[in-house]
Length: 121
Length: 121
Length: 121
Image (cartoon, one colour):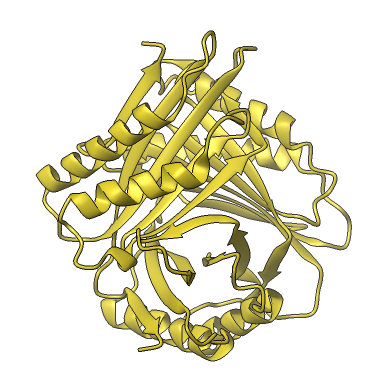
């Protein structure tokens, strides 16, 4: 905890995804919400097969999903999604003439059944 | 919003995934539930590594996950999953002798913390 | 139902992912929670682009997400995540000197709107 998934349309070839992941992780560390920086597990995935809407227009998206153990307040969640969206806005180069959507979703993970281990202990 | 994920076992080589995504998006537009067609962000992924059950039989699956901002009624959700399943049934060629599972899951996204931006504004 | 997603950092080249999926499925069958073994749909994905925390250290992760139709008790869920974590601990070879995180998350799927079909019927 937390888990972060970055998903983006593969037409964003200019995206420096490793840099973006590091910046997103720094934003999470900076939030002060997480006890240990190593808890933040982020991964990224480009999608070659995607479709935004139905119009014959080139479009792109970058979507972040942040999964947290349940229990954080709505205010904290809103701050987290807002700060991650700022990173995306800053990091994703806008290409003129193409519609680009950025989004951040927060997901509550069931705390009682979540199981984890860190090795070596 | 909404986000659609199409996941399928990579033994379904005959799947025309771009066509299926477009048909799913048309089904969503046709539902009248979404203000703008460009809001629908769909992506697909084949899984080379998968396992259905434990029996030594060739099996396949196509799974759709549709994520919506929270607040829609159970009836609306049921209609949406039903219409997406119809698209899958129609689009996925059944290969004789192989078990094929199709499924549609609806996910509520937390509305308060969801953040997005469309560029250029 | 159920759906299992196995995600891992691509630096775990030694992971025999097909074997791990089969062992996870056997653990689920052994739980007695699922009527039919063929209902268990598991898939795995390696992530080439990932970042654990912010420190310049090599780290790795293996994360399982198990999605179930809603309604199971907290005790049952805890048993399921515990047994899946045991499989991971046993299956993932620990490489000395590298931090490795294993985790299991359980997700409730909305039962009312879940739609599925098995072909041929």
